[in-house]
Amino acid sequence: MNRLMVMGSVNMDIIMQVNRMPMAGECMVAQQVTKQVGGKGLNQAVAAARCGAQATYVGKVGADEAADEIRKVLSNEGIVPQLYLSRKEPTGAAYIMLDRSGQNRIIVHGGANQDFTDQDIARLEEAIAHQDMLLIQLETNLPSIEGAVKCAIKRKVPVIVDAGPARPGILELFSGVDVVSPNETELAELLGCEKIEPADRIAACRKILKHGAKAILLKLGSEGSLWVTADDAIFYPAYRGVKAIDTTGAGDAFFAGITMGLTYGKTMDEACEIGTRLSASVICTSENVCPRFLPSEFGLEPGRAAGEQLTFDI
Image 1 (cartoon, rainbow, N blue to C red):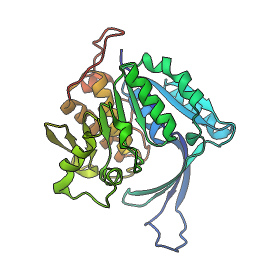
Image 2: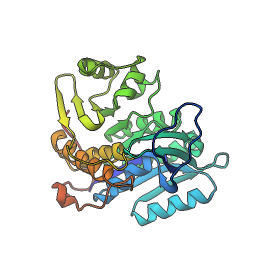
Image 3: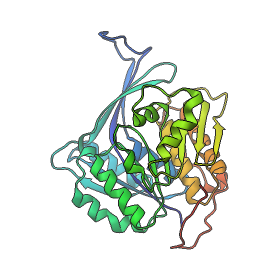
């Protein structure tokens, strides 16, 4: 079994296509405006499900039409929904500007994503216990993240944290986490500095390890990624020659691929190859999530008995 629980944000994405990014104070006309369901958490759950994972998505929505659209997507993708309803906040929204080179700027209104309660997390513990891995981001409110991580560690379920959006003062959250994965900007924010120079990447990652994380996977965009433990540092290059149409969701697909590989017992080398392929499949389309793949295309074959403890080398 390859049971993956993804807990994180879900938004209604409003995508505005522009020729270039506006200057400060400039009013610009968009060439096209579209809407689609997105958010880090949902995108990662969809990518994992499209590659054969038994995915459960945990999120919180408002009592609105956007929530109805989200339920349809989860049903169509074969994802087990564990949705909580906020009576105070609307479903989250993301406003995305996309230029002709495929680069984007995103402004997010958290809405219901920020309204998880202690009761929500208490109801989640038993479900976490039946998972092979928990994948979580930092887009929901901090108490919900802390609660879910503690539940997973208590139940000996491996935890991977997509460390975005980063914020100072949360390093203790990573104690006992198997993998923390920031990009360069997020790594700098976690450490309270303006920028991480390329020569300092490994040392910066190891500062995070001192707070109890077992490994760091630093996302380097078009360069690739860097895997850092206390003893090793390995660079994994990105695919070359991929024409970018829209980079939105590429990082989510990469992260979902990594997690998928690890739940199937793959090495980090193999998992990064899967993540890189999924990321490339997103960049060259405007879909924001990867197409469907058969698990066998990645050498992913079910091999563990139900209830068998998942482990991977760090």
